[in-house]
Image (cartoon, rainbow, N blue to C red; front, side, top):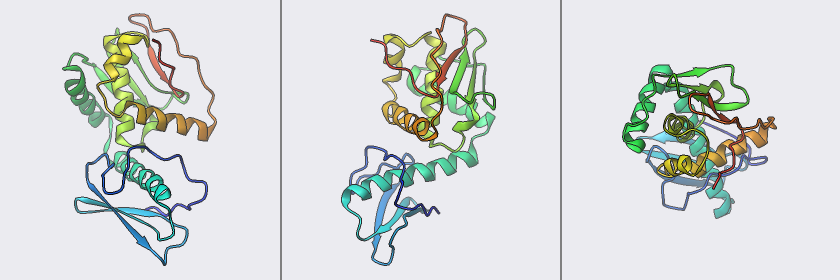
Length: 214
């Protein structure tokens, strides 16, 4: 259970509307207001529902913002518990099948601890994908986006129109990019330049996502 203060909240996730679930796990979301709750927000799983507890005085806009924040925090906690290298490889294979027709076939997918200024990287010639350990604990849809980004590089080098068309198949691309940009802004990380990605050369996803090339 989380008890963050309402002051200094992280940026909200988009897509939540009252009565509509924005939970990546597809559970229904129930918001409970309490007059006794003054400054804290908490959330927990209850069977097939996600329950979010908020102060009664919160506006609908604040409610929507905090529901998104708490859903991301719960998803991050669950992701941190479950994704090891083996699970990461299986997830990459499922994502490739779902969005790329199994055309992207990585030979190895693993967490690494030496990528502090980029979220992910791949070497197409070797079919290897590496994800920064900093992604551990982030929401699953964010990890999925980084995996898909690197899987797409196994098919298309660089960040041209063909590359971004591949990622358009993933419905949470913009949401995930926004989340990562928010993390970078909060931590004030340096913004590395995006390396050219010639065929066979390593291809990286910087900590600040590169702008689309049209």
